Length: 144
Image (cartoon, rainbow, N blue to C red; front, top):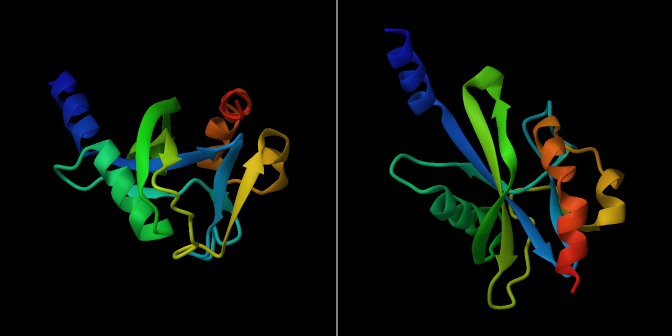
């Protein structure tokens, strides 16, 4: 049945989660070091949701692994962004740092804090661009 194939395809789709870490009106951007075809492009940190793991738990784990920070995962930002010709989906969440933790670039070439006016100052990965478009108002509200 066609409906069953759609359900099966949706279940087999990989979920990639990413963190828009927001502090004092700025968001953290991370420069990819690999693979070569995306090295030098910028992204929100994150990674794959493992089987049996919630989006929020995966994102908290990835933030520890990539940036050595503990975080509180908040609301989703924007819609699901299709990846890999529909075989995966990107979900981005607003995230806040816990306990005064400061990010360190453990898996990235560089990290930068960007204000709303600086969002266009780095070359974002195509998948992150729809989320970047959602950020200016969110960043302005977080300054207060």
